[in-house]
Length: 109
Length: 116
Image 1 (tube, chains in turn brown, green):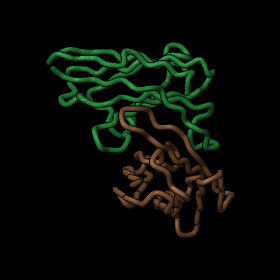
Image 2 (tube, rainbow over the protein chains, first blue to last red; image 1 turned 30 degrees about the horizontal axis):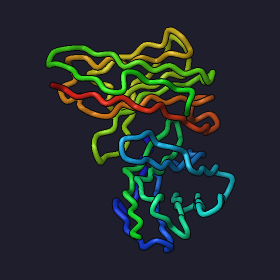
Image 3 (cartoon, rainbow over the protein chains, first blue to last red; image 1 turned 120 degrees about the vertical axis):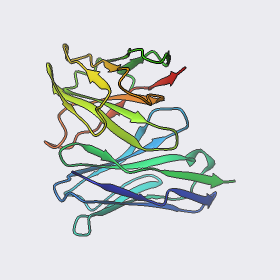
Protein backbone atom coordinates (compact mmCIF):
# COMPACT_ATOMS: atom_id res chain seq x y z
CA UNK A 1 0.00 0.00 0.00
CA UNK A 2 0.85 3.67 0.02
CA UNK A 3 3.58 4.90 2.37
CA UNK A 4 3.90 8.59 3.17
CA UNK A 5 6.95 9.90 4.97
CA UNK A 6 7.02 13.38 6.45
CA UNK A 7 9.95 15.49 7.63
CA UNK A 8 10.84 17.08 9.93
CA UNK A 9 8.86 15.83 12.91
CA UNK A 10 9.41 19.11 14.74
CA UNK A 11 10.20 22.55 13.37
CA UNK A 12 10.79 25.81 15.19
CA UNK A 13 11.03 29.12 13.35
CA UNK A 14 11.13 32.75 14.31
CA UNK A 15 8.04 34.79 13.61
CA UNK A 16 8.26 36.21 10.11
CA UNK A 17 10.54 33.46 8.81
CA UNK A 18 9.48 30.75 6.37
CA UNK A 19 8.73 27.13 7.19
CA UNK A 20 9.02 24.17 4.85
CA UNK A 21 7.66 20.68 5.46
CA UNK A 22 8.45 17.86 3.08
CA UNK A 23 6.70 14.60 2.26
CA UNK A 24 7.46 11.66 0.01
CA UNK A 25 5.05 9.02 -1.20
CA UNK A 26 5.52 5.56 -2.63
CA UNK A 27 2.52 4.83 -4.85
CA UNK A 28 2.86 6.42 -8.28
CA UNK A 29 -0.93 6.11 -8.66
CA UNK A 30 -1.48 8.76 -5.97
CA UNK A 31 -3.29 11.68 -7.55
CA UNK A 32 -4.35 14.00 -4.74
CA UNK A 33 -2.26 15.54 -1.97
CA UNK A 34 -4.00 17.49 0.81
CA UNK A 35 -2.37 19.23 3.76
CA UNK A 36 -4.09 19.48 7.13
CA UNK A 37 -3.46 21.67 10.15
CA UNK A 38 -4.40 20.31 13.55
CA UNK A 39 -4.42 22.35 16.72
CA UNK A 40 -4.18 20.58 20.04
CA UNK A 41 -7.27 18.54 20.82
CA UNK A 42 -9.06 19.60 17.67
CA UNK A 43 -9.87 18.04 14.33
CA UNK A 44 -7.58 18.35 11.32
CA UNK A 45 -8.54 21.21 9.03
CA UNK A 46 -7.72 21.23 5.33
CA UNK A 47 -5.48 24.18 4.53
CA UNK A 48 -4.43 23.50 0.95
CA UNK A 49 -4.42 20.66 -1.55
CA UNK A 50 -2.89 19.88 -4.92
CA UNK A 51 -3.75 17.42 -7.67
CA UNK A 52 -1.31 15.42 -9.69
CA UNK A 53 -1.80 17.49 -12.86
CA UNK A 54 -0.53 20.63 -11.12
CA UNK A 55 3.02 21.41 -10.02
CA UNK A 56 2.39 24.27 -7.63
CA UNK A 57 -0.49 25.95 -5.86
CA UNK A 58 -0.53 29.04 -3.69
CA UNK A 59 -3.04 30.51 -1.27
CA UNK A 60 -1.86 33.70 0.40
CA UNK A 61 1.03 32.73 2.72
CA UNK A 62 0.73 29.02 2.01
CA UNK A 63 2.01 27.17 -1.04
CA UNK A 64 2.39 23.55 -1.99
CA UNK A 65 4.69 22.09 -4.63
CA UNK A 66 4.54 18.65 -6.20
CA UNK A 67 7.27 16.74 -8.01
CA UNK A 68 5.63 13.64 -9.47
CA UNK A 69 8.86 12.28 -10.89
CA UNK A 70 10.56 12.30 -7.52
CA UNK A 71 7.31 11.51 -5.69
CA UNK A 72 7.60 14.29 -3.20
CA UNK A 73 5.57 17.33 -2.26
CA UNK A 74 6.19 20.18 0.12
CA UNK A 75 4.31 22.77 2.15
CA UNK A 76 5.72 26.28 2.31
CA UNK A 77 4.51 28.85 4.83
CA UNK A 78 5.89 32.35 4.46
CA UNK A 79 5.84 35.21 6.97
CA UNK A 80 4.98 32.81 9.79
CA UNK A 81 2.85 34.01 12.68
CA UNK A 82 2.36 32.55 16.18
CA UNK A 83 -1.10 31.30 15.18
CA UNK A 84 0.57 29.08 12.57
CA UNK A 85 1.84 26.94 15.46
CA UNK A 86 0.18 23.53 15.15
CA UNK A 87 0.74 20.03 13.85
CA UNK A 88 0.70 19.76 10.07
CA UNK A 89 -0.09 16.53 8.23
CA UNK A 90 0.49 15.72 4.61
CA UNK A 91 -1.52 13.00 2.90
CA UNK A 92 -1.69 11.18 -0.39
CA UNK A 93 -4.51 9.30 -2.08
CA UNK A 94 -4.06 6.23 -4.21
CA UNK A 95 -6.69 3.66 -3.17
CA UNK A 96 -7.22 5.40 0.13
CA UNK A 97 -5.96 8.43 2.00
CA UNK A 98 -2.67 7.82 3.80
CA UNK A 99 -1.32 10.39 6.23
CA UNK A 100 2.22 11.35 7.06
CA UNK A 101 3.29 11.21 10.69
CA UNK A 102 2.94 14.95 11.23
CA UNK A 103 5.17 17.97 11.88
CA UNK A 104 4.90 20.02 15.05
CA UNK A 105 5.50 23.60 13.93
CA UNK A 106 6.31 26.17 16.59
CA UNK A 107 6.54 29.83 15.64
CA UNK A 108 8.54 31.74 18.21
CA UNK A 109 7.53 35.37 18.83
CA UNK B 1 -16.66 20.28 8.56
CA UNK B 2 -19.70 21.52 10.43
CA UNK B 3 -21.80 18.84 8.72
CA UNK B 4 -20.17 15.93 10.54
CA UNK B 5 -21.32 15.31 14.09
CA UNK B 6 -19.57 12.95 16.46
CA UNK B 7 -20.83 11.95 19.86
CA UNK B 8 -20.02 11.69 22.62
CA UNK B 9 -17.04 14.04 22.77
CA UNK B 10 -15.68 12.28 25.84
CA UNK B 11 -16.29 8.65 26.77
CA UNK B 12 -14.94 6.39 29.46
CA UNK B 13 -14.83 2.63 29.00
CA UNK B 14 -14.45 0.00 31.66
CA UNK B 15 -12.38 -3.09 31.06
CA UNK B 16 -14.29 -5.70 29.06
CA UNK B 17 -16.95 -3.26 27.91
CA UNK B 18 -18.02 -2.48 24.37
CA UNK B 19 -18.68 1.16 23.51
CA UNK B 20 -20.10 2.77 20.41
CA UNK B 21 -19.09 6.12 18.94
CA UNK B 22 -21.64 7.87 16.80
CA UNK B 23 -20.94 9.68 13.54
CA UNK B 24 -23.60 11.45 11.50
CA UNK B 25 -23.12 13.61 8.41
CA UNK B 26 -25.60 15.78 6.55
CA UNK B 27 -23.30 16.56 3.63
CA UNK B 28 -24.70 13.81 1.41
CA UNK B 29 -21.22 12.34 1.18
CA UNK B 30 -20.83 8.86 -0.19
CA UNK B 31 -17.76 7.77 1.74
CA UNK B 32 -17.18 7.75 5.48
CA UNK B 33 -14.11 6.86 7.51
CA UNK B 34 -12.91 6.24 11.04
CA UNK B 35 -9.41 7.20 12.10
CA UNK B 36 -7.60 6.67 15.37
CA UNK B 37 -5.05 9.19 16.67
CA UNK B 38 -2.79 8.49 19.61
CA UNK B 39 -1.19 11.42 21.46
CA UNK B 40 1.54 13.00 19.39
CA UNK B 41 0.95 10.59 16.54
CA UNK B 42 -0.55 10.63 13.07
CA UNK B 43 -3.90 9.31 11.90
CA UNK B 44 -4.45 5.62 11.27
CA UNK B 45 -7.39 4.29 9.31
CA UNK B 46 -9.65 1.85 11.15
CA UNK B 47 -12.54 1.28 8.71
CA UNK B 48 -14.05 3.00 5.72
CA UNK B 49 -17.26 2.72 3.78
CA UNK B 50 -17.90 3.83 0.24
CA UNK B 51 -21.56 2.86 0.03
CA UNK B 52 -24.43 1.82 2.26
CA UNK B 53 -24.21 -1.73 3.61
CA UNK B 54 -20.58 -2.06 2.58
CA UNK B 55 -17.37 -1.29 4.46
CA UNK B 56 -13.70 -2.20 4.32
CA UNK B 57 -11.02 -2.74 6.93
CA UNK B 58 -8.31 -0.16 7.23
CA UNK B 59 -4.85 -0.59 8.70
CA UNK B 60 -5.90 -1.21 12.32
CA UNK B 61 -9.36 -2.81 12.21
CA UNK B 62 -8.75 -5.46 14.87
CA UNK B 63 -10.93 -4.94 17.91
CA UNK B 64 -13.31 -2.58 16.12
CA UNK B 65 -16.56 -3.02 14.22
CA UNK B 66 -18.72 -0.71 12.11
CA UNK B 67 -22.02 -0.63 10.28
CA UNK B 68 -23.37 1.50 7.45
CA UNK B 69 -27.13 1.02 7.41
CA UNK B 70 -27.79 4.59 6.31
CA UNK B 71 -25.78 6.90 4.09
CA UNK B 72 -25.53 9.55 6.78
CA UNK B 73 -24.51 7.30 9.66
CA UNK B 74 -21.33 5.30 10.33
CA UNK B 75 -21.08 4.21 14.00
CA UNK B 76 -17.90 2.66 15.36
CA UNK B 77 -17.94 0.05 18.12
CA UNK B 78 -14.83 -0.41 20.17
CA UNK B 79 -15.02 -3.96 21.43
CA UNK B 80 -13.42 -5.57 24.46
CA UNK B 81 -11.00 -7.23 22.03
CA UNK B 82 -9.31 -3.86 21.53
CA UNK B 83 -6.77 -4.00 24.34
CA UNK B 84 -5.51 -0.45 24.17
CA UNK B 85 -8.42 1.72 23.04
CA UNK B 86 -7.49 4.98 24.76
CA UNK B 87 -7.17 7.47 21.89
CA UNK B 88 -8.76 10.29 19.96
CA UNK B 89 -11.20 8.97 17.34
CA UNK B 90 -12.00 10.96 14.24
CA UNK B 91 -14.83 10.33 11.84
CA UNK B 92 -14.57 11.76 8.34
CA UNK B 93 -16.45 11.83 5.06
CA UNK B 94 -15.90 12.67 1.42
CA UNK B 95 -18.09 13.14 -1.60
CA UNK B 96 -16.63 10.33 -3.68
CA UNK B 97 -14.62 7.33 -2.76
CA UNK B 98 -10.90 7.77 -2.64
CA UNK B 99 -8.85 6.58 -5.52
CA UNK B 100 -11.46 7.49 -8.06
CA UNK B 101 -10.88 11.21 -8.22
CA UNK B 102 -9.14 12.36 -5.04
CA UNK B 103 -11.78 14.28 -3.14
CA UNK B 104 -11.38 16.27 0.02
CA UNK B 105 -11.95 14.53 3.31
CA UNK B 106 -13.69 16.50 6.05
CA UNK B 107 -13.41 15.58 9.70
CA UNK B 108 -15.78 15.60 12.63
CA UNK B 109 -14.68 17.16 15.91
CA UNK B 110 -13.53 13.87 17.35
CA UNK B 111 -14.27 11.70 20.36
CA UNK B 112 -11.90 11.09 23.23
CA UNK B 113 -12.09 7.54 24.57
CA UNK B 114 -10.40 6.64 27.84
CA UNK B 115 -10.23 3.26 29.53
CA UNK B 116 -10.80 3.40 33.27
